[in-house]
Image (cartoon, rainbow, N blue to C red):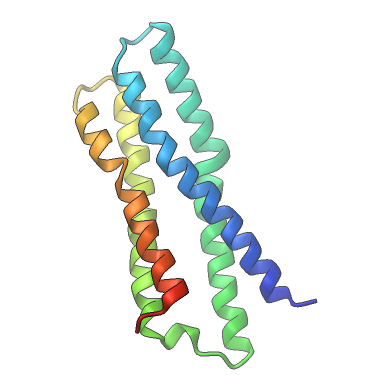
Length: 147
């Protein structure tokens, strides 16, 4: 039994969970912005987004990194040089972008919950597409390995 494949499987599972959460979280906040504090929709979307953050987003981003780093370590221990390849550096840059976007989404979500008025639904609609675009880049880099 190859532990590397188990670690890789776990990494992919948590990447899928993270991406699903990043695509849904802004939508919850857009719906929340379409109502007022105290209204059922506002409170429902606030609760749903906080559960999504606590149960899926935050654990997934941590586990993606844990299993990703473990994969690199296991590759290195086998004599592999994954960490030296150009496509891997580009993928890592995109993953850092996705992780930063996770943090930014959480910050925006807190602003929506606090009703500061500094977050616009239009901004969230535009940002909602960014995780998908970054993910496309990651998948192409990992599968095609263009350089």
